[in-house]
Image 1 (cartoon, rainbow, N blue to C red):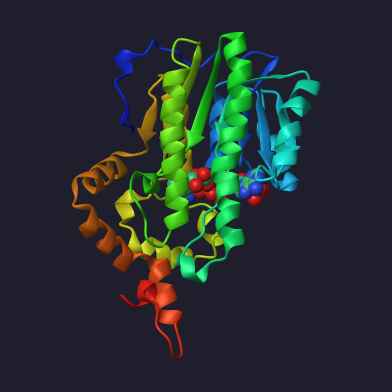
Image 2 (cartoon, protein in one colour):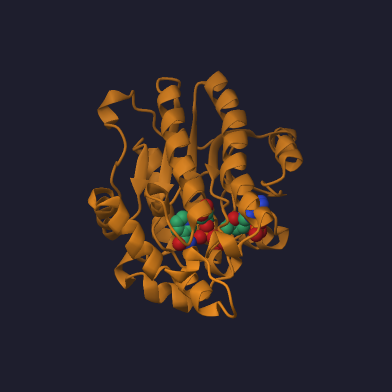
Length: 298
Ligand SMILES: NC(=O)c1ccc[n+]([C@@H]2O[C@H](COP(=O)([O-])OP(=O)(O)OC[C@H]3O[C@@H](n4cnc5c(N)ncnc54)[C@H](OP(=O)(O)O)[C@@H]3O)[C@@H](O)[C@H]2O)c1
């Protein structure tokens, strides 16, 4: 289920997903687990050759072995590293392929109070969630516009629709993804290149563990009906490109809850989120000894 939450479709010339071809590839970053692996499976099931990108090459190779009937490439790349990103598209070209579809899915998130985090951790998530998206979109858009066709899908989050105490930096990176992708979509209208944002609500993946968060604690804080399987989320994302929908939220429950966050008084919403966020609760209960901090003592 999905909803076009951006501008009206009718205002832009429709640009569907380019058809598969033996010399083109769909690059999926963060394909070694979770939503990214499912996005790659979904593309492959529709006949698209895929280039699987992430740091853990062994995981990418496992997925590559599973995908049949399409051409699969594996490239180990830290998309948070500018030097590694600079050679990614050249590497693909050297393998005789053009990037017809780019899926910026790789993402990480810090969780908990910013005062408990480190500048390195906060900036690392900006490098992966923001810098890599800008860099790869800029490279891909130039190639795609020159060819007169292509598709770009950036993975945002429902957390990108409002500030999120407990995931302040992460939510801000996803707000960036939404804004940037919407602007890029309008810029590329009429060029033959379609652009979309996929905003998932909560999905069981390795994301929470990578953020150092216990999944059971986190799951208890978010109603069951909001959780969606990664496979269904991936289908919504690729459908968004296929039907040129622009921006989508995966799943009716997340569409409704996100809508509610837009109409609720902001102060009330943020107070509720700050009280309920499991990582902030964890940080509050872990506080020991003298001294106070307003962010944790509320
Ligand atoms: N799970 C959710 O509830 C949820 C909700 C909304 C949005 N999202 C978004 O969905 C996307 C996918 O997340 P997920 O839930 O599927 O999490 P996940 O299972 O942890 O997958 C994250 C992927 O990103 C890759 N990655 C992380 N850092 C990277 C780096 N520096 N370079 C290259 N690849 C990197 C990881 O691969 P390696 O570790 O092998 O590099 C992994 O393949 C993210 O953008 C996330 O923000 C997730």
